[in-house]
Image 1 (cartoon, one colour):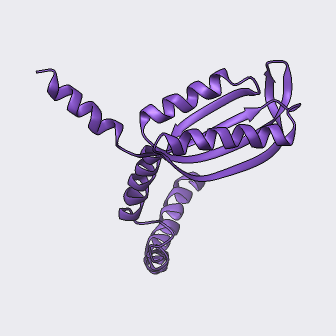
Image 2 (image 1 turned 180 degrees about the vertical axis):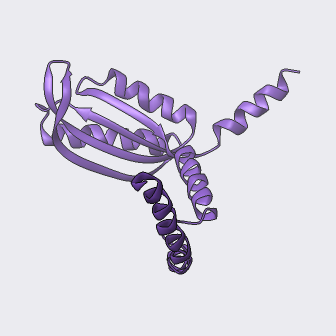
Length: 166
């Protein structure tokens, strides 16, 4: 009976998903050391069977709050196709790496699926700006029928005026 779950685990491990891994490196790290750190993470991804889509150095930015006594840091964004085991290993390496002060991993395939669902719902709904201006003819018709009640209104005023003057 244990063979069934083991097979399922193997299937899950080979499933490639799309992730974004952003991490912040201490500001006092030299550019060469940063490149060496990124190369090591890229090597981990490729050796683990993942595919690196892109690497972006976003540069030095001010942090929203102090992290490990630093007010700013160098941001790096990796976009990766990998399985969960490889991402766990990548996060472990980021956690034990001295220059990395903060990191986050986001599974983007679920996010893309959610956004596609929202787009599909919005596509089925009609936009108010796309509907032809049907209310514009309605006031014109109301203006044509308005004189009849307006004629009745002065009569009502005359009736109320007559008892007041008597």
